[in-house]
Image (cartoon, rainbow, N blue to C red; front, side, top):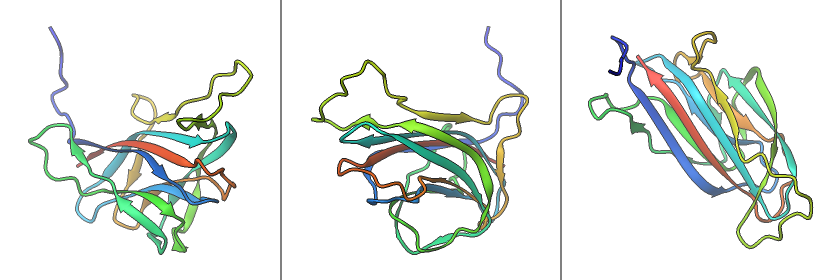
Amino acid sequence: MSYFPPTVMPSYSAAITEFALDATPTTIFSIFGSASKVVKITRLRVIIYETAQAIRTAKILRLSSALTGGTSAAMTPVKHDTNNATATATPLNWTADPSGGGTVVGSIDEINITSVLVAGSTPPSSHDSPGLTVFNSWNDLITQAITLRGTSEGLAVDLGSAALDSGRKASVYVEWIEF
């Protein structure tokens, strides 16, 4: 017999696969809160693709103002239950760096990512396997989820202007709850 908690929060996710990145990207992903609901980020995964394998440092930043300028695209939020209301958080992937806004409150995490080779690339000669995914989970019973209250509060993945090679792409998955 399976057990479901008496109250399950409306959950959503959004994902995008292998989108192009700026040559020296800063922000590659952001999600901002809602004017009408509290948003709690529960999972975040990032994969970086390049022609030559490299180690890249990604920072997960908390922001206190919206990003401006640059080129972003809205990621499609998917309801985990079709009875959920429409998602109100705004996840974005960035193909050209934002030029303003995005006041950094602080760095939540800093992670080294080993890039994955894009199709047609020559595999490295070593037997090292790439760290395919950065995965952060804030949904266990001990840690508090990253909470966004209002449209000016956000979370972003920043690559710190690292010079990526010509095969530069990224994939992002984010999951959150709203109440």
